[in-house]
Length: 240
Image (tube, rainbow, N blue to C red; front, side, top):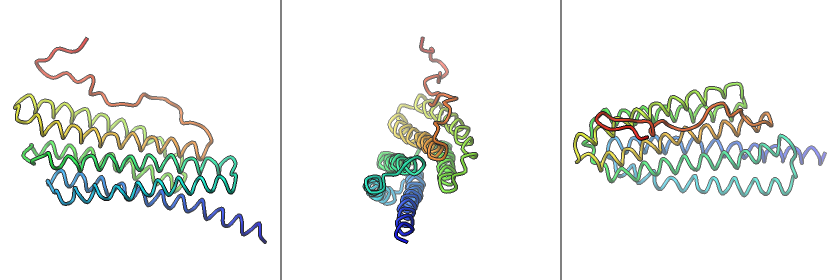
């Protein structure tokens, strides 16, 4: 009877880690959504809220780390259970970083005056929508452990990289047209890069989930990264 109780308590501890990951993921998604909304609408109050909300993710990561260490010390898990616990630590770190990226976008609101073309903000919104969709889908895979669905993550990351490169080119062109655009567009470039990085963290999470479920590493079948180093604007000479 006691052994049944121990197994039940152990299962509850593992479920607790999963629930905390899900809560952190939802919080990070809201932070990024609100950060982009604050940027588009030049909403300084909402931006400050996002910056303060980052403390919730910092605390969530610390809580998961502490809980995972206690479980490992007390239960001495093996195989799948050990991968589950170590995976929770890795995933919480990626989610916390997504929150940092959202906070970084929110911090730029004070430096953007909202006079940029709507197309630039629409581009940022589209990039954020794609990155957040990828994050939501990968967190759904974590909840269901349906690793057969993980293939979409890398395809989606390619789309994010392509959209980021296009936005990068558009922002540079706008800066070249009028020197007064250089400062605000530089801030928007930083925002776009932060949003693009969310896709990389979603990919990291997908790779961790694959390892948790299968015990194997996902095949490294493509290089990561955007193509902004290949961008050549009209009237410029390509780097050798």
